[in-house]
Amino acid sequence: MKGALIAVLAVAALAMAPKIASAQSVSIACEPSNYCFGDASGVAYDTISWSANTFSTGAIFSANCTNRSVCRFHCPTRPGMINMTVSYSLGGQVVGSASSQVRCTAQDI
Figure 1 (cartoon, rainbow, N blue to C red):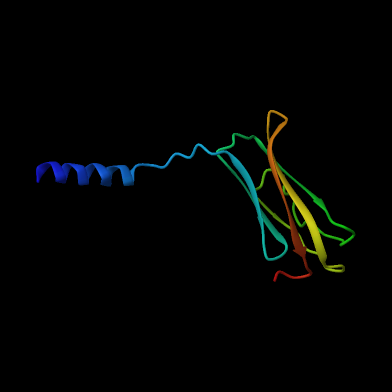
Figure 2: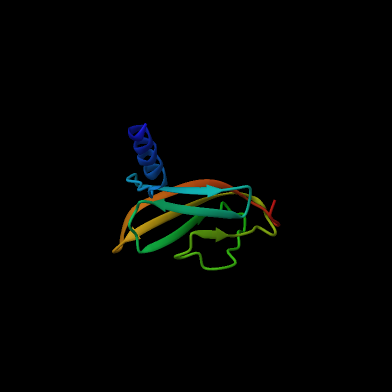
């Protein structure tokens, strides 16, 4: 009985221990419109940069997205699809990037 209690306590302690991820990945999530979020799980970086192919939509970026995990934009006169890329760099070298196509509209959907 005492051995079973110790085993249960050991399992409970393991379940409460902090989780350390060893996977390194860069991802981008853009939905439903005018907003993208970048994430660099397990990647060491000192700079976040964003780039866009706006395909003549007239996309407007209301703020500089550099070193921000979120980038917002809108297309007040010509809505359409744009391609967004987020890149993470360390010491001037890109260590990871991700791209996604996203809808650009006059107002958030």
